[in-house]
Amino acid sequence: MLSAREVYDTIWRMNKEGSLSTPLNALGVTAQTWHETGGYRHTCGKDNTNLAGIKCSSNWLNGSIPWSTRKCVSLKTQEYIGGKYSDFKLAFRWYDSLETYLKDHA
Image (cartoon, rainbow, N blue to C red; front, side, top):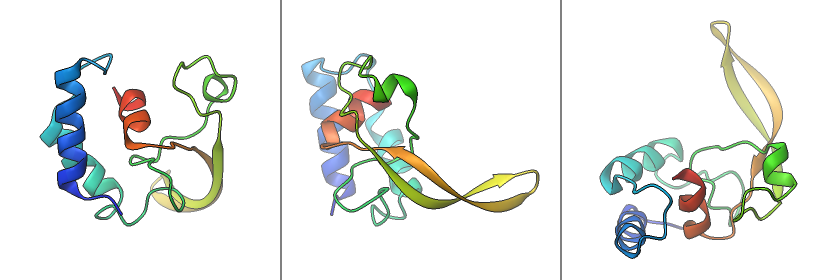
């Protein structure tokens, strides 16, 4: 399981290397991903590093995003629509590594 320190350090390293299209605020993204995943316990599937619930899209599936894994995972989820929660089964992007997720997040 990921830790906040690992996420923060990876963002810091990738910013320093210039491997992100847009530099990320390491503290801000670490806090957001911690919140989105309930302390990195819920990452859209076992061994998936989707830390923000990013859903699949046609450009992800057709590979027009250079770092796309072209993989998705279908999961039950709740969405807040019209003032209430509704249950859905939706497709989420699959990331093989934290670095791939961060490239997409940037």
